[in-house]
Length: 289
Ligand SMILES: *[C@@H]1O[C@H](CO)[C@@H](O)[C@H](O)[C@H]1NC(C)=O
Image (cartoon, rainbow, N blue to C red; front, side, top):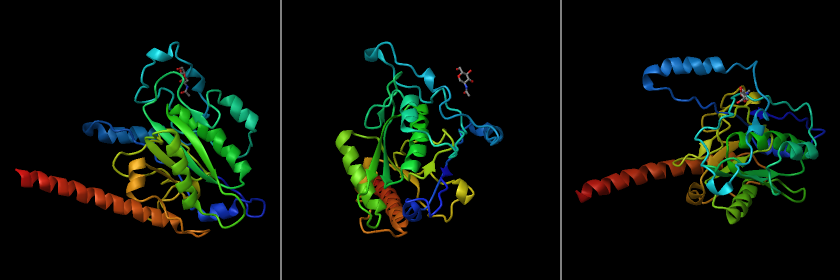
């Protein structure tokens, strides 16, 4: 992930930045068969040449509407236009007009479904927000094509906190999930800080069925390393079912660091709960025999 750089004096988002400890990206190493694991590793290492990256809009125009909606096929498991490293820069600020022009298939409300195939995953992107218009432009300019490259059906929900009182990120996330679930039966809730932009389109914005997933484990400003092992801030993905099981997020962190850690603890408890539940079901299986 690439983190936006903004100075305190000129940016109203400073507090938001402070509250939201940062991000990203997970390089998904594709799995070779076990016998060629090592070669597979070398191959991946070689392809991660940071001097070469592609424009985030490259080849998106290959996705053209299917001639007949009724007979449209399900999308391929892996998109044809995935390239890996993307060129991300915050030097140019793109206008809203440009963003709209470059994303012709995005519907009003910030939603998209692939025009050429039936999406395999439906992901809601939930973004806590307050008065950071510049950041918003950078974020949307890169995130829309990034999600389209992965053939997702998605909506981006900006959850704006009114007024100038203390910022409450976790509460905004709760509101976002609540609103998103009214619209659609999403496969995945993707909780996203707005100052982080993914740098590699192999970092798939889909959920793991079993556990919440941390997508921003490597952030440029943090030297692509986790600041501490239980760090779970920035960008995470969980299913609506996980969300219900952890009883949502804490509403009580106003302008304070720590809500990330509270959420991480909930994820951790969910994990041990799931492990215990599977042990229990195994035990019942044995008892029945
Ligand atoms: C874009 O698509 C063309 C045609 O499929 C392909 O030859 C080219 O390699 C693609 N470019 C990138 C950067 O993936």
